[in-house]
Image (tube, rainbow, N blue to C red; front, side, top):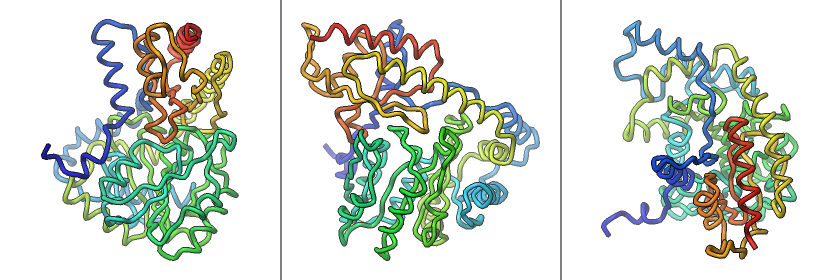
Length: 397
């Protein structure tokens, strides 16, 4: 009864909630296959672990690090963006945080005032909407369609902009759809943005390494966009470092300074040892990452073909990340005699209870007709999960 309005305005993270339900079932001895969390099933590459171990043994990294991160790590991140993404960031533009989620939260708190609007490309990662609301601003959802690979167009963006619009946020490759914006599509969007002097772009590139088309364009690299873009990235997905909790922003210095001020009051710096591992990741051998990506590519083909075997399920062909976002609305209104599936929430709960497969309802991502399925799982689990889904869905009439 006494919680703040800003907390009451947001929901619990749907991905974490479904993962928790799956764990409850597993604790009861039920064989649940969890496809709900976006978590690589690979171990962190050995050279990254070795770097962290060396840091512990050296005994130099037990005091508080600088709030925005160690200087050498920030320089390495800037150098990576200069070399790989053609964006001239410097260390002063980088703030290292406790995961990309905190990076985005810092930016929202640093930039947004009550009544500001943020355009969110939908379907969207579940926390975008919540973090805008936590900053007491207003999320404005602009929807892409399955027919257009779930991608929002520049014309849609232009139509959604109002005098209150402060920022646009999207991910590419996208969580939950796996869509990747082409350079031309980003150029069209940047043309719209540059018409509005105070409009900023928050570009989430956390899945940049898991890109099957090889055309990863950073919108910050486009003419005029360096001063208008906050790039979000991290180490969780491409380097299998989810538990290490290292994310970062690269942004104009005034925004980086504002985010640093927020972080200094909430958490201070990211874990010192995690940062040493992150430095090894960003400066080291990328062959383990490339091997992971090739494995994800194989799993994508496997799951895509298996989804096509399920009547009524419609899915786009993802070009990045490790998710499918199939439309399952064909089954809404159908019943197994005991339960009637009304929406995506019902679908996922019923699939967990009857099929023992954990998915995430699409409503949390802005599209209730869909569910999110992560294929960051073993081929064995994927085969079994899709078999269960096909068989249990066949019981609905």
